[in-house]
Image (cartoon, rainbow, N blue to C red; front, side, top):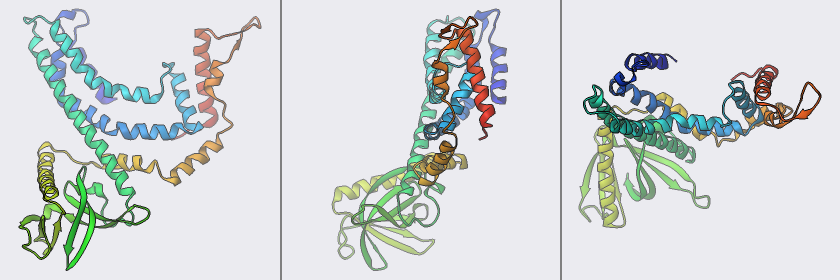
Length: 354
């Protein structure tokens, strides 16, 4: 609310209600470009998790009725909440298109022309930045979901250090004289390896390598007994090493490229200031928890408790008895009054609390 109020005061200062041709719309966008990235970026990061939560809750009568009651009380359009949640995501792209049209209809001599031109470029960049952050946020959700499918996970959660899956594949590793084939998953900052369980095909966690502490040493073929297409990862901090090798030279080249890309990704994130915040982790865990049985059972009990509640939509689609005793469809005024009464009635009866 405070952000909206501050933004409104800035807009009022630049937008001439009485003398429209003196308005400086471009100035508003150029002055607030960092806030656009911060506010819309945060919103888009949480959008996927919010939709997943809404979808889950909407399956249960108590919540779907609550959402409908709120809509009726505000006399809003017949659009579900997820439709309204999508609006800010769509708007970030619409700004750029609207500014592009504004440039076409602004004289070059206008005091705001250069600012509008700059604003168009700025909002294009904001849209790109927000889309990239949204893509990374979706990737974070996938990492949380992936970890939940791995059996016997040990140590820190994946999201404590990593935010993106870069590459995966089968490799043979040699460590402490043992040779084993494992499935390897390359994330930023760490390389996780698992054993594929026979029969179920599920993955079992076996270990991880901290890439930040490692240096990679290329191994010529047969420089070590039985090793071709391989390399060694050495950890001077722990004074440990591990040899990894592939079946084919093309696979090794791919892994070398991906390991280089991982280091570049880490540098880019450091330079751009990208961090996986606690809020982003929490949203990812909420998203992955939607498939858990315990939460479904909890909401099922809530649904059964309130299963006797009447359907608001059915009530609204019903007929009304007029003062003359004639049964007919409700007028717009009567319908609006009924919406408010039904909404208030439901919230009062259920004493809904979040």
